Structures are given as C-alpha cells and as structure tokens.
Image 1 (tube, helix red, strand yellow):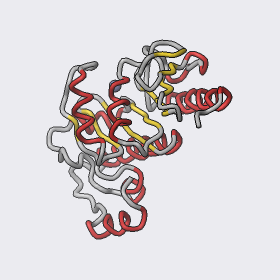
Image 2 (cartoon, helix red, strand yellow):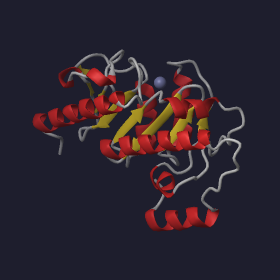
Image 3 (tube, protein in one colour):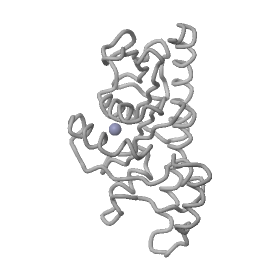
Image 4 (cartoon, helix red, strand yellow):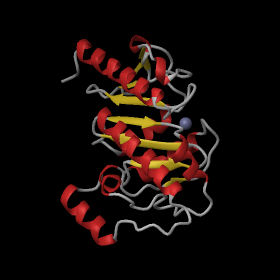
Length: 217
Ligand SMILES: [Zn+2]
C-alpha cells in the first residue's frame, strides 16, 4: 500500500531535518550533496537541484513517480541518476545520501588506495555500517556513464566512493543512510590521521566474525 499524503509530508520533513543537521556540522557545503527516499508507490522524494541541504523547504522537495517523472516540488538534483543506479540494484535500500564531505573526498583523491576497499577496516562500526568501500573511476559531473559505473558495484556494496567527488551511501531507512555516511566520513578522517603510521586495523578474522554475526551492510 502506498504512503498517505500525511506520511509523505513526514518524510519530506525528515529529509529537511537530516539535511540541516548534515549541513550545520559541515558535512556538506554550498548547494552540494543530495538526499533521496524511496516511496512505497515505486517513486522517490529527492532534494532539488541547486538546493542547500541546510535550508530545504519540505514542500519544494522533488517528488518523482516510478518512471522518474517529476510529480511535484522543484526539479530534482542533477545527480538523480546516481540515486537511481543504487536503488535499481538495491531493492533492500530505502534511502540514499550523497555528499562532497571533505575527508571522504580527500581519500578519493589519494593515489594509492585499494580500489576494491578504499578505507581499511579500522573499527567495528565501520565494518558493520559501511563494509568494503569500492572506488568508482572519475567521470564528469552529470555524465550518465557514472550511473552505469555505480550500478555495476551497488548490488554488492551499500556505499561507493566516487574519485575526486565523494561518497554515495544507501541505507534501509534515511536514518540508517545518514548514520552510515557519518561513520564513513569519520573513518575517512581516521584513515587520513593515520597515514604513514602503520596502524593496527581489524584482522580478517575479526571482520569475518562481525559479518557472520551482523551480516554485510
Ligand atoms: Zn556530487
């Protein structure tokens, strides 16, 4: 059954609240970053193009139908295809956050990161919320080929890191997607702090134990 207009308004408010929280803490700047929520009718709510996540008007958040056609609100983010690529491959995911958050972007610019796992498993919560983070090659902003590259990885990964750009993170709920994005950004910060220090990460056995108990995110 589809959500009622009231339920959809609650979701609009929730996107604005999380957007402001991310913006106020410096996780996104200017009009960068976007948030989306899958709806029960197969459509989506998405933050509008050129909108600042810190000052979203819930009523103007874009609502798209299952074909991606705008039903109401402002025109959606130009990066809508990144969200669509993740949703198509992840039926279990209900919400997506994409930011240009500083530490994650910094990691995406490092020359020698492992493209299959850009950030090593430094903490248990990173393993549980983000898991193995693959790197997506560089494409010009708006290039649909970027969507295809994300599509190829999204089935096996709840989060991907776009080279010289930033993370795209899916979660079962918007809250889960926001928490995973925050975990990723903080772990990126740790990873940068530990450069050249030969840190003790989680062992493969410790990672396997977490995945056996909690599953892969
Ligand atoms: Zn972006």
